[in-house]
Amino acid sequence: MMGGEYVDLHCHSTASDGTLTPAQVLRLAKHSRLSALSLTDHDTVAGIEEASREAAKVGIDFIAGIEISAEYPHPGTMHILGYGIDPNDPSLKSLTETLIAGRDRRNPRIIARLNEMGVHVTMQEWQQEARGGVLGRPQLAAILARKGYVSSIKQAFEKYIGQGAPAYFDKERLTPRQAIERIRAAGGLPVLAHPTQLRVRDFTQIEIEIKKLRDFGLAGVEVIHSDFDQVTVQLLTDLADRLGLLKTGGSDFHGSNKPEIELGVANNRRIPREYFDRLREALEQERRSATAQTTRT
Image (cartoon, rainbow, N blue to C red; front, side, top):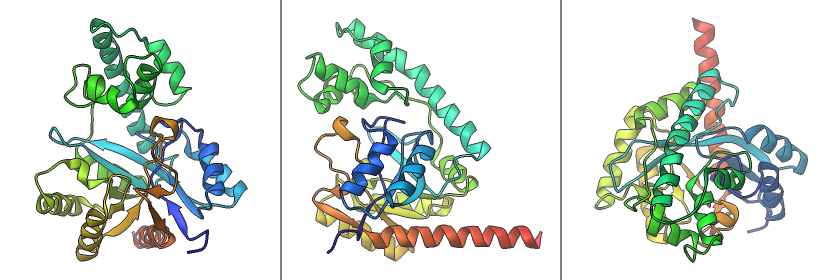
């Protein structure tokens, strides 16, 4: 395929736990010959305005996005991507403030536990690493690696701050239904991110979970991701088609916090432009329907 036929619908910037600014992510997307992108920072839309401006400047189609953490039983995690949300929606702003406040209450507990374990790191160092963005564990992992407590970001999660590790503390989350409803209330379409991270016993259980989410208003499933092999991609693609859900895909790029992941590439796969176009069409249809309903009432 020629350049311009690929996109990335799942990536992060310094507004959350990435290492490139929103503008730098868009410039990298242009350099990588992507034709469209959605910035999906964790629990915040703080980078959307900058990203949107840069997208227009470099000539890349752009959809505003967010990635919201939802409640889910250990050892799994559930993240809901919201596409086409209005970053100025008052309820969305209130939601992101609540989610970030939950992180702010959790993070000092992580630091205190690490200090108890003889790992010398401070909140100030973490804030500096975040460069004004949302504090995320990948930034803390980068500090631990740089200080020599671990050999890699991955080891930092396994040894100290990942689920089940001694310095792990959970944060406050919405229920899956609440996350989906909040995204739709802000004009967006909710999509289940990386379904394999639910860590259920088999693919049949993934299907059951996705059907439950569809009943709550889920609009799509991420079928291409850096975690997925070809078998998983095909299973999720077939499932999305069978359930009438949108298909999306993304690298889950975080910059140097996940150095093995390249923007626009998910485990040696590219994300087709078709996914972006169908997502945009679905958003336009939702807006037309909402306008028609408002006119009738």
